[in-house]
Length: 412
Image 1: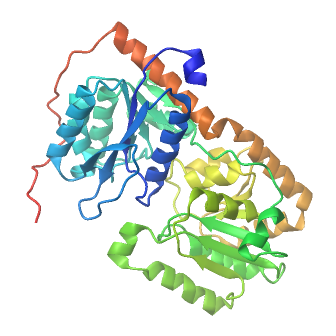
Image 2 (image 1 turned 180 degrees about the vertical axis):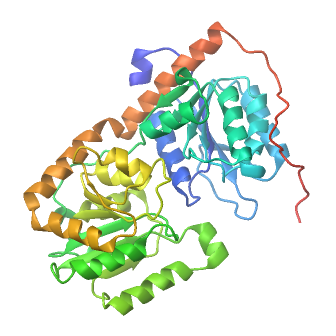
Image 3 (image 1 turned 45 degrees about the vertical axis):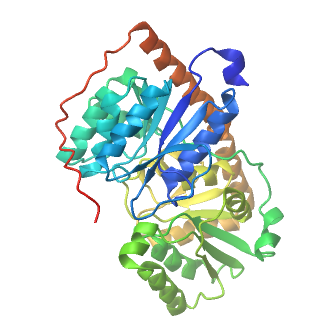
């Protein structure tokens, strides 16, 4: 094991964030990171503090040792006491403004202020135009955390230029991916009834903003040239969208399919699938399509997974895609331009050699992103901050936070 053989450092690492079986990208990320860390640390060195929504309690696996209801301020203090009393060596926080309670997730700061051990904070969102409240929270994270971890060079630059985070406090660790072989898509197609078909794939929680309607318009221009094409749209509707709007977006897409006469070419799979099943769907895809409508996305697990499996990718130029698809690792098309998207997909399907060259570039570029390598990067940073705190201990302190935490209200 890398951690056992190479270094002597922290023995216990706690992860704080949403966690499976909750259906969200950060929950999946936390699970994958925890499992990869557990593979490197001796014994039972990793455990999880899971963020709950009061209305949606979950049955968690055994590695979850503490649950925090997002809107209960008292539970953040209890979680800090739990970590301090158990003398946890390092805490890794998954941060996104919407998963913690208070205004823009300000209740998280109450927990961080009380911790005595070093903290790494992985930023899943870095905003170019934050609100005053969001900017203040990032400033507090800068002071309360020993390192801010980002997953792209653009996020790294934004932290320096917009939030004035010192470069020595920023770590760039890529998004993790499953370690899968580089194989011919035909190897998987019989599992999904797609033998002899060319498979386009989009996966992830479904919500407006994903731009599937643009991809369907593009498909109507692809099918006349490649009649064997099918388009698989894999993923359940995002739970918060489902709660607020029902399945209105999916229903709109299904009506669009009928209007375009694409019923034999489009298949919706309204499920949140396991990692094993997801890897099978990705393996069967000839082209992965990402038609997002807005540029402001600093990372994407779906794009990372597709590139890591050696897929040819056609994507709109959101921030993370611009970085990951550079140097011929994929095709970038303008936002909301179905004609250009169709042209790029048709070109890839017309030229097998060029498509496979693109696939190989993507696959090789992503080898350092497999989860065991990402876990070792995290553990190296854990060692650094652990040693820094050992040399220069901090006094236990409590900040008067400029971000209003809000008063805790009794549950109805």
